[in-house]
Length: 317
Image (cartoon, rainbow, N blue to C red; front, side, top):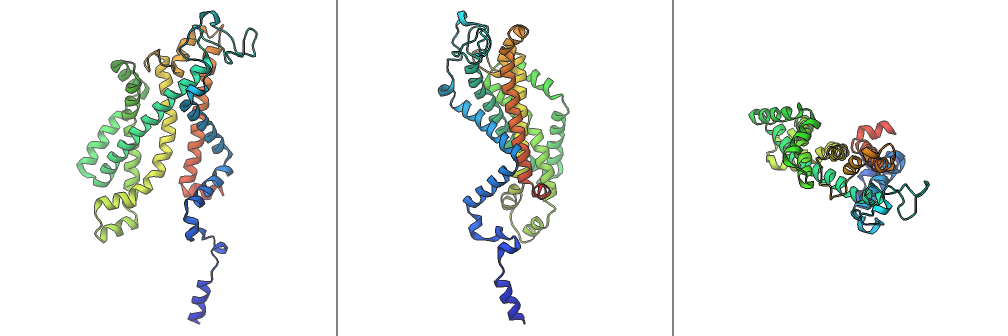
């Protein structure tokens, strides 16, 4: 009877039990990519967000190839020209020109570089440093945790936009300064999330088992804790990247972001605000670029949250 049961177990078809994840062939990179694509195709909002985000990235990388004009080239004869579909417009400047005759479409394409660099590099700084500091605070505990969390809470208690404007006004207009400002001021958010996840994971059974068999702290952190941290932190990073793009545009509108010689969406909004009544296209299209970029990143981030959290995947099924 025991032999019959064992024989039945050996002949179990994984497809009938839903245990395809245990098959060796389904652990390949190709199978995992196909599975991710199926999840993305099922969530059309996430797919749209990814497409929009990729278009912005491609535009930023290929700006010299895609831009029809030099974004800094001035042509006062063609200044304040409307888009090509409006009366007085031309196909030479598809979205019109600004008050100095610079092509708006070209400046929008080049402005994507500033937004993507600020968002990506700022999030990278906050992500890496915040995760390390949060790991130390959550795993070590004691006085170290108290000091780290006190400093983090002090920074988070400040009005964020006012604090960023104050620091930017002191440091001056520079792309590097803007990246560093957003990177370091967002560290406390990642510290808090990381520390909370570490406190939760530290009480899990497999962590206690690893401690009981004498595994060293670095092995526990890198093998057991960090893989479970990446999901929530990556999701947080996408939303923070979107927020940084909006805040950078806000600083540019106030004249505290990159210098005027560097095309950016915030600078374009600031330059076009005084002409908003008579020449609205000077501000409308940079504003639409900011909104679409944030919209795409948020849709993609929402999909990432659902994919990286198994509980959300089960709810959506």
